[in-house]
Length: 162
Image (cartoon, rainbow, N blue to C red; front, top):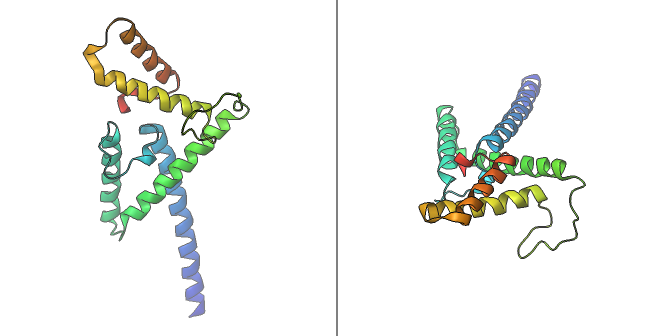
């Protein structure tokens, strides 16, 4: 009997490792394909870009329900956590040696954010503001909006997902 238990224990450990790796790989793929900071989108978020995150969450829930998972929200929470961790690690790797420019970060800025993350966050805010104005933008404002879009594209941000 104890041999059966030890075999089952090994199976549990192996399945946990496999699930962990699968969730990590899924989170990395979501970081590459969903809007920046997708892992911060909450269930009640109706902002632009949140819809694609909600659709992905719904698709994952459907797959988990097919295999009779009892609590898909736990898996989604883990994937979001891993997505945030992977993004932070990626930003840290890209930003090594580029921080400490001596400038103040301003109100509410986190000292842990890399310059890359700061650029992306602020440019996305400006891009969205310009997008809301749409045809009302003229002249130099329209040109500035185009430059913001090109800066985001240079930072590998998919504007269709912003």
